[in-house]
Structure formats: structure tokens, C-alpha cells
Image (tube, rainbow over all chains, first blue to last red; front, top):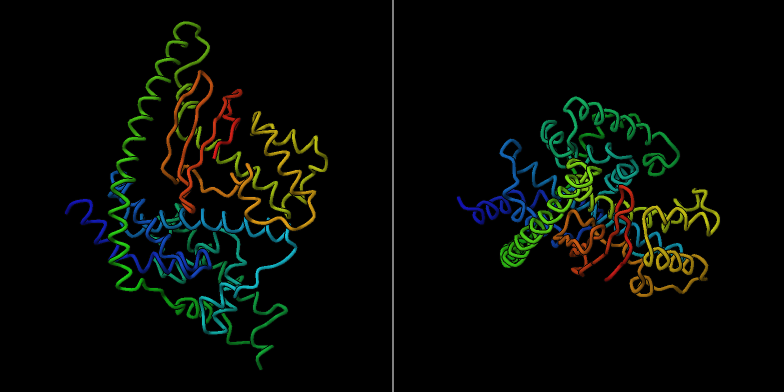
Length: 172
Length: 211
């Protein structure tokens, strides 16, 4: 199959997964343009694709870099404007835009308070349900590290439910 | 509350909804990916060949220096004029300015005088860019409110908003023995960014911001 055919096949096969990943990584729902960018980059960098990694994890790596750029740019602008304008954006929070279920909203909010790489591991391993091997390929970490990080992240999330604004305490 | 253990949390996380690209949107996106990529790919190849040419010239020049003066070895030259080194230095310079512009980071720094701030910036920027970013940053810090996004976007400080040039289409051109101009397309806005960098010691400083 030629390069164009391969990219098209990957887009149809993994496009939705890439979209979901970027949505949870950036906290934005309208990310089709970023998904498109991922596949444009994949096409351009196709020759550098190593057969040793899977197309899926390679695409997730590109998606991760794309999402990082987006978040960095977004947060810089927002923080600066918040500071100078002295006001906060009034739009819905990302968790409200993404999730209807209130518990999941609380959980997603807590996931976003985790530090890297815990947050990334939870998104890739937990939300996207990538295998330990796939997650380790995307993040360039050892498989053993992924398992430890994921376990610790879940423990931290569990502990956070016992603190202050407990979901169940406020919804009895 | 007892229900919430690691297994419960993992199951909840596993059940987060997944998002799909709408079918008609998929077809449109595929068309755009391949129509865009033709131009981008051609340009990328062009950039690559131009870059190779520039690097070949740079390498030749530096190898000559090595032979004549013996004070630059090939390894150093390759590292200093390498694509990764130049782009990484640019990204670090942008990040340093960005950190200075993020209130909660700046407020924790010890850069409490103009002299300290300028000294800090001078490690990453050369003139005239150094003066331009410093004065703009100072003006924004001191101004009381009413600074619009447009005002920020129209200043040299706007460089902090750009995507990492390493993740974009870029072109590196050698403009003198120790200067290069680097152009890249901002992934988010599509705008072209251009900086001139000057080699100071073993670091590329951004000396001009043209955008």
C-alpha cells in the first residue's frame, strides 16, 4: 500500500481514538483541526516511522506533541489575559463540556490535578485503555514504570475523594 | 464513600465516553489532509534540501576553520550548527520569556528589579530583540488593565504564543558566520514566524524577531 493509502487507512482506523485522546488531553471538545494536523504530520514524517513501533502508538506520540503545544499556548495566553484583564473566562469548564455524568466530571477534574506523567498515564492507560506496552511506547518510559505510575495515580485519586469537597458527602 | 476504591475509580475512568469524528467531517478532513500535505510536503522537501545545502556550507566552512586554526573540532561544529541545537535554543528562549510572562511563575522568581530581568533575558536574547521584549514586557507589567489580546498579539512578545518550531515546518538559513535566520509556520494560527539568531559562546540567542 502506498503512503497515501496507509495514512488514509490509519485515519479511518485510529482517527476517533486520536480525537478522544486530544479531547481529554486539552480539555477542549472542538479538536478536529488538531486531529487533522496529527495526520498531516504523520504523512510528512512517514519516512521516519520506525516499523519497530505500532502505527497506533506512533500516532499517539504525534498527537501528544500536538496537544502539548496546544495546551502550552492556550494556558500562556489565558494566564496572561487573566492577569492583565483581572477577569476570568465565563465559558463552561472543560469537564462540563466533555462529560455529562457528574461523578465523571469530578473525576476528570481530579485527573487534571495530577502531575505529569501521572496524568498522561491515566489518560492513555485508563481513559484510552492502551496497554502497558503501548503506553510505555508513547511516553518513552519503561513498562514497569507505567504500572507503578498508574497504580500510584489511582491511589492518589482515591485519596483525593477523602479530602474536603467529597462528591458523596455533598450529594447525600 | 466506602465504594470509592482504586477498582471503582479505574472502572469509572475506563467508562469515560469516547469521541467520534462525524462521518461527513471525516471525508472532508481526509481531503484536506491530502490537499494540504501536497503543499506542505513539497515545501518540507524544499526546506529540507535548502537546509541540507545551508548545513553543507556551514560544515564546509567550519571544517576549513578546523584545518586552518584548529580551534573548532568537527564534533563541536556539528553540534553547534545542528538543527536540533538551533531549534532547541530557540524553544528555550521562548519558554524563558513565556515563564516571565506567566504571573505565578514570575511572582515566585527573584527577578524583582529591571536590571535582574534584563540580565536574565540577556542569556537568551540579543539586541535589538532583547530591548524589544524587555520594554514590551515592562510596559505590560506596569499598565493597569485594558490590555486586549490584540494588543499583546501585535507586540514582539507575541513570540511566546507560538508552537515549538521543532514541531512545525521550518527553514534554517545561514546569514553570516555566526548568525542564522529561522522561519517556521505557527501550527495554531498558520502565521509565519521568523527570528534571527546569533551564536554567543555555545548558545544561539534570538537577536531579531520578525513576524
